[in-house]
Amino acid sequence: MNTPSVVAEMTSPYVENQEFPGIVYPTSVTATLEAFRRSFPDAERLAPEEDGGAAALTVHSPEYVDFVKEGSGRQEGSTKFPLNVIAVPALKVSEPRTFVGRHIQYFFDEITQATPSVCQGALHSAAAAQQGARRLARADRSSPGLVLVPSRPPGHHALPTVGGGLCVFANAAIAARELSRSGRVAVLDIDQDHGNGTQAVFYDDPSVLTVSIHAEGWPHVAGFAEETGGPGAPGGNLNLPLPTGSGFDAYLPAFETALEAITRFEPDHLVLALGYDAHREQGFGLLRLDVADFGVLGRRIAGLRLPTLVTTEGCYGYYDSTAEAADAFFAGWAEGWR
Ligand SMILES: [Zn+2]
Image (cartoon, rainbow, N blue to C red):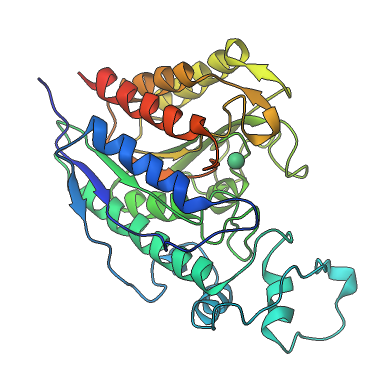
């Protein structure tokens, strides 16, 4: 059997007790890891290394990275959330003087809370994304590999200077930045929501193609089809928004369009931002995929024959469909590879 030259996972880049209100992240990451191990039982396990925020600095501002580092060192439970203020520019008169004051400046919504464990998870995930990318870059080009970085918190909504949408550091973008040192990179985002953070990082960078398939809507100020890249990278971004309630019959043609664009770009590496919230019982039902559909996605992505790094984005641990979709996806990938 033809096997990939590298199949690897980071062992524990997330923090066990990390959670956002009502959304239990570690459960969904555990389901992804278990699914990956079922399909790739002999996968290499990479031990994550601490990097003091260096990986995050490759796509984020020093001030924002410093803020997250400060958050990681605070005492659990020492900060009261929610914050109830969004720092729109018109509001600001003075510089903030407290951690909570700075927090308001660094997150574009209230649901994203820089608890110590979330900040520690963000630093771990960013380092793991870069480390996983370095491992993939060393893979034998004649037989592409697959590296899973089970990132928590997720990353695809995090912008260079602010986080939000439950995302702190842009893990997929950090991996793509690292891989772009050794060639062209395509990022494919199949989370139900627009990968606005990844898009923002590479909007004017011709070495990285960003593609997102998502339900139209959130975050309401990005994610539209006419956002096709900045002056330095025309055609470097592809958004494929789908009407609310779309099922796989509408999703599949968009997915084919995404794969065609990636093939045309001729990347050396692929970064996949993998979410399961396009499943019909998740993500408020904005998209209506079934478990088996994730198997098709995995199979087709493997068919690109590109060395691929996977980061984990949205999925909700309290649904069985998370584990089932993860199983279907990686089994599909393994099958598509053969
Ligand atoms: Zn999502």
